[in-house]
Length: 108
Image (cartoon, rainbow, N blue to C red; front, side, top):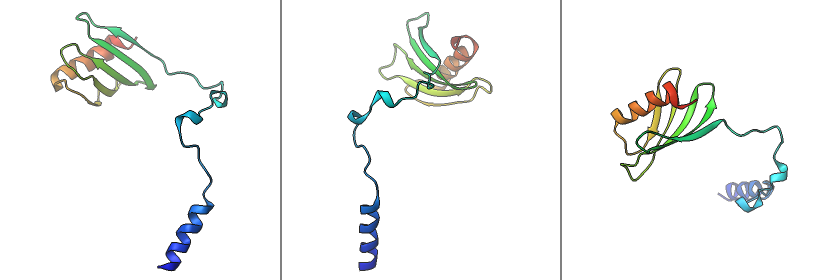
């Protein structure tokens, strides 16, 4: 048991210190070659708000603020295959319609 505690103390002491808070972030350390994700927001005909960004190729992260719901719906969709995974208050049928509409015309 003493050997285990000694090894744990030695490992803890040997670890380097790491910045602990978001306040330690220094924007001057960000590389100029990093770019923001492509994306945008728009409103549907009935006033719902859709925001998205391109993750990679045909994969998008999408957030929907449906006015009939109190919480947003969020999902990641592969518009090439139509597969999506997400979380929120909308039924599968309503989410399917949003996914189809987004992949057909909403991402442009």
